[in-house]
Image: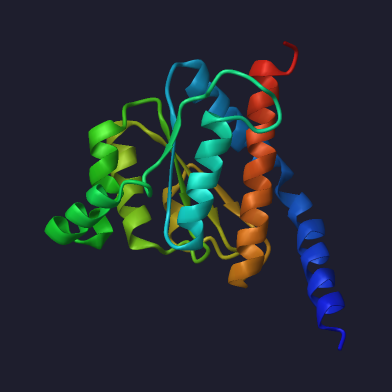
Length: 189
C-alpha cells in the first residue's frame, strides 16, 4: 500500500504550485497590516472546517503566532452560537455573517471569507454588506475561486479542487500571513 506516499506526494505538489500565489499572499498581509495600523480589525468567517480555520486564524492574531506580543484586533463570526442560531432562525442561514458584520463592522476593517468552493451564500452575502460598509474583502477559496473570486478585492485561490487539500493550504497560507503581520508590528522589538 502506497497510499501514504501518494497522499504526501500530492500535498507536496500542491504546496509547490502554491508558490504562484506569493504575490497575492503578500497583498493580503499588506491589507491586514493597513487595517490594524488604522486601528481596525480583521474579521473572519467560514462554514464547517473553514469555520474552524476562521477561529484558528483570529486566535493567532488575538493571541500570538510566534512572538510574545500585544494582541491584534481580530474576531471570527463563527463563535457565537446564540447569534448564529438566532439569526439563522429569524433571518435565514445566509444572513448569519452579514447580520453580525452590520453590527460590529466599520469602514476600514477587513473581512476574510474562507470557503473551499468559493460559493458559500452566507459569505457572499457578507461580502455584499462589506462592500456597502467600506470593509475590505479577502477570499480564501479553491482553484476555481467560485463566485467569491468576483466579489472579493483579493482572492487566494489555492491550486486544488479537493476539499481537504484546499483546507491544508488555507491554514498554511493563513499562518504565513499571520506571521508576516506579526513580524511587521513586533519583529524588531
